[in-house]
Amino acid sequence: MKIVDLTHVIEESMPVYPGTEGPNLVPANTYEKDGFKETILHMFSHTGTHMDAPAHIKPDGMTLDAFDVSQFVGKAIVVDCHDLCEGDRINMSYILKQQKEIDEADFVLFSSGWSHYWGTDKYYGDFPVADTDVLEYLVNTGKKGIGMDAISIEPISDEHLPHHHLVLGSGMIIIENLTNLELLGTNLFTLAVLPLKWKEADGSPIRAIGILEK
Image (cartoon, rainbow, N blue to C red; front, side, top):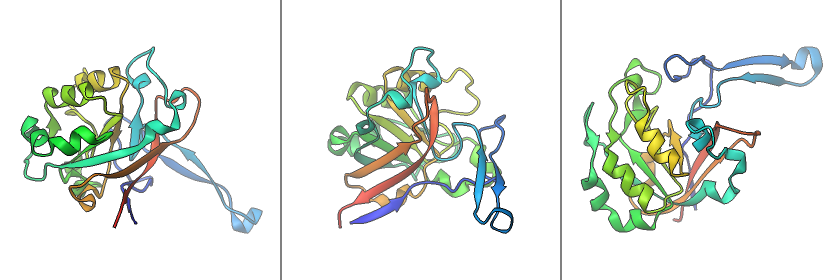
């Protein structure tokens, strides 16, 4: 068995969605003063590698704490989109290449290589996103969730969030800011994306891992 960490480190200098306050990690107790170390974490619920709940965009949408924990574990497949350039779209041809595995998967993760720009201005740029018909296909085939190695599933410039409304409105979850997707290969694997269990969670940082059978 091989475990692949798909999670960015949370730190004060990390990228956050434009207009969002970055995280603060404030020492609350120190070894020297208190004999132990403890830190106050102050950050938005959609910081770093994180998950969006339907409640993120729908007043009556389900919150993460209301899901059964089985929602966050399942079979997954990575769709390789590294050949795409800035501003390109992930179209149905990428689904058709791996349709059998995609149809068997609970989660579909799009690997564009954009995580390589983490920590640079380009990370906020014109990253590839999926076409609406791709998202509709995944919604209609009953997935638990979809994920990206970019800061959003749609262009930052689109303030109406149509992709979020489509996916989250179906009851699925969205996983953003993934990394290391290229290490997972092209076969089905087990994905675990566990959010913090806080009351009425509209989203949460997660520790995402891929579990590969050797």
